[in-house]
Image (cartoon, rainbow over all chains, first blue to last red; front, side, top):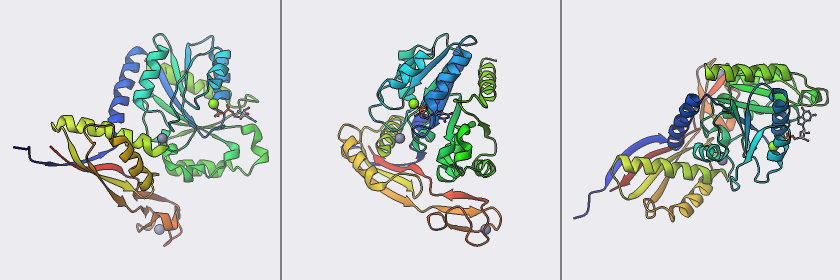
Length: 223
Length: 114
Ligand SMILES: Nc1nc2c(ncn2[C@@H]2O[C@H](COP(=O)(O)OP(=O)(O)O)[C@@H](O)[C@H]2O)c(=O)[nH]1
Ligand SMILES: [Mg+2]
Ligand SMILES: [Zn+2]
Ligand SMILES: [Zn+2]
């Protein structure tokens, strides 16, 4: 006799399995004392440039490792390696985001023991990286000035999930119709708790504020 | 493509659900997809049909999709309105203090299996 067909009411987000894996990974990294940051943005917003400048600035203070997931070529991994970071290129096979399982594989390949900070340069898009928890302790997004101050309205989830919003390329502010007040209002509508830092990896403006935020995040994680 | 990643995520979650409920085959899966979830139903179905061929649990399962219309609620006047038609600004009072009530779902609603 065949088993009767069961109807099961699930009512679960498709992301719940990934969320569980991410939570376990976060716990493991917490126990190991390694802070992981998930860095997200559109392509070209300045992730690699910022990571290179950050690595150079903090090289004497902490061990930094970077996992490059944006595009399959290893150009970005070489760039941050030259700046002094331990780095690997993940091969995401054209995937538009990184999930917790892929992150875990990357970490195993990287070996995060002894690292104070691991940063994921996530795939360049503002949609699904926001939906897939990677297991990072903090989520940071970059919005560059040329992209405009209305992006929080178009990609609300990305702004909702981010702990910190970096406004990059602030050196170009005078060339674009980018209104800081509008931006802040638009971010607040989606996420009243997000911290906003304006910076330029080119001129160094705002870099100290960002570096202090990072130091504090690492210190808190290990506490 | 975004939908493929979401299909893989859904299949992972379904694997777990099947284990919990001691199912060896799932004969149907009903998904709820929000109008502003960023998922295109046709792409989702295409990815699903491609991926299910490689999945013993789901090989013969039927995919049913329920669309959830997006609705926004206004904090100032308390009324609700269709999100896609009016966007972020309340058509009744002009306020932009609005938030999405539903329409963002990417949810497994129900499965049948044995
Ligand atoms: N003017 C200016 N250009 C920048 C800044 N940061 C990055 N860029 C430029 O933006 C482009 C893309 O940067 P990249 O770091 O590769 O972006 P990614 O795709 O997010 O990693 C490069 O040409 C950088 O030189 C900045 O602070 N100011
Ligand atoms: Mg890059
Ligand atoms: Zn994706
Ligand atoms: Zn209203």
